[in-house]
Amino acid sequence: MGTLIIFNVILMLIIALLLFAVKKWVRSDRAKKVILLLAPIVTILFHYSSFLYHSIFTGAGIEYVSNTPNLILPIYPCNVVMWCALAYGLISNRESRFALLLSDYIFWFGIASTLVGMFANVDFIMNPTLGDFEVTKSIVAHATLLFNVMLIPVLGLLRPNFFRNMRNMVISVLVMYLIGLYCNLIFSALVSEEAAYDINSMFIIHSPFEGMPFLRYPVIALVGLAIYFIIFTVCDIITTPRGDRWYNRALRTLNKK
Image (tube, rainbow, N blue to C red; front, side, top):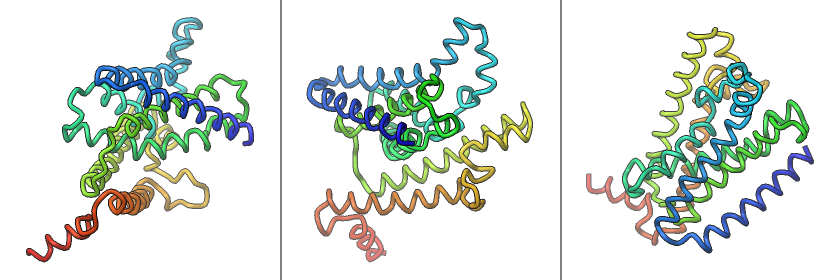
């Protein structure tokens, strides 16, 4: 695991340098649009790089896809974050409700999913070597996605607002649950129930942690929402003047009733 930690620290230093460069030199709206679109495209290319290699050079692209289900459907949160980052890059009005929903989801869910994907990478745990391109690609793809995620605050696109943030997080966990149900249903119907169980999209069917069968998606989502509630409350206290914080507004609304 020491190798994984060192590699990830190097990647995070590179990300920090790139973000510093973006903060310093990317100023115009046009440049921001380009970087927000280019970054997710790079992540997607890393994600599909092995498939593209096998499709072009070995002719085993279809076989590779059949053994890599998250290339077919977004079975994990990081897959959803990746495609949402691309959608966000294509949006022109980033003040719309949909754009704010995407930015909240990409940043708050992306931070957790990318760091887990880097420092608790399943591919590396199963095959602890950086000499295997599949392992290295998986870690680097999560690192490029982390760069996507961090672009939002670096470019000044993070909009702290307790009520909107919490609403968007509730919407996000519900949508991800529906995506997980859909993916599991597809694999169950088209392949087998065993395949759906093994893929376990969004960890709905069973817990990813041995000895903790109760820790499936609904419980994980509730724990996540509780953590976000605390984080957003702290952000609200830091960014909002005393007397106008979310609990002050909530009390005023209740008193009016």
